[in-house]
Length: 202
Image 1 (cartoon, rainbow, N blue to C red):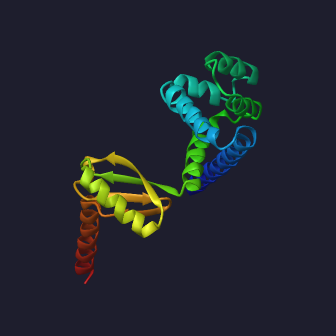
Image 2: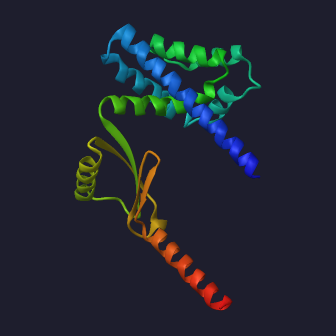
């Protein structure tokens, strides 16, 4: 089971690296052909396709990602689905991904593209999970604190999880700061169990 888990993690890591390579190439192509002003528009176009087409239509996403579906069928489906104002760069990306059987990377490319744009602008995405929705004052205070610590502009991505009971979990890249009551209770429960076991053994 552990070998299978490691294999899945490695596959995910490879896909993430590939997605970043495509995103970097897409940004470079946008700057070279059309200037910096088009880079943001292309990112929006990519995200709208992922969120508006793939995320809302599981059957379409599965069809495009399936290795059992031929490249020509995928190309025809994409040609019919794309609006007439689709940029040449975005069409080119889809063509390359189709030829290389990598349309399953689209969501990852969109995420990597967004992250690269934020890094270029000195911004950092920060995932914040709280037990209840944060007030404007709390969001402002958290933003100020993170800005002072990171020396960069945080972009808060907020999510509510009532199971946390209280507090919050802040994730910055691979770093996680967990101040939730649920985690504190779990930690306390573990300590009590450990002490109980030690008493029994004694």
